[in-house]
Length: 291
Image (cartoon, rainbow, N blue to C red; front, side, top):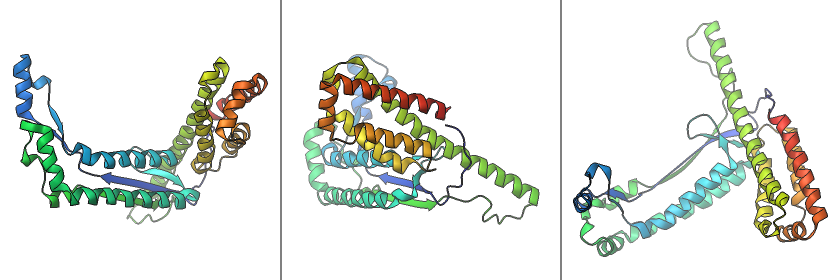
């Protein structure tokens, strides 16, 4: 992607998601010693890890994976930390979805808290002689391990709020470094979007190009429709070239429902060859813009 200096403070925000809960993984040193003695192995080379409250935590773990999958899908990295960048036009959707996830998270957590004693009793049956009541925190300590936070902050603007007592030259240098850092992160976020699109188009072109009709499935076009929708939200700089690619993708594969599109690609050699030609054209154009 060709680099472009843009002010995006009014086009995007920074989001930080934090979800924590009791994972239930505990090392059992005594059981590990039994295993090492049985096999004659060095106890430092193997461990026995218990999954405490596995059945009770499973729904929370599933939700956790869903939350972070959505978070990573609709945002892009911003630097090396956990903060990510989100296009301003996607804030309402993001907040709405996170509120729903948060409500689910606490409903599942409260169910765990309410039935904690019951779950511990079941653990004694599952673990047998490996059961240790000291492995389980008190209910009050358990509650402290659960949290769900979403912080949304504005993108800082270069040259604003420089309150330190510095010389003009030092302030100018820091502002220049800040602008360069922000620009680099924007470029990295947009490059990631371009590369994700290019990879997905390449995968679809590979499927169509092999002529294996069994490999052409509705799911392929469902994922393309989702990507076309996401590109609007991931285009944090309103790049007209990326928008052009989104429109071409939408026109090519999203005008019909996925099942119909898959059947057409299976049955019509002409339509399949035409789609493949357009895909290759799109990828060739993208390679020039991504360089």
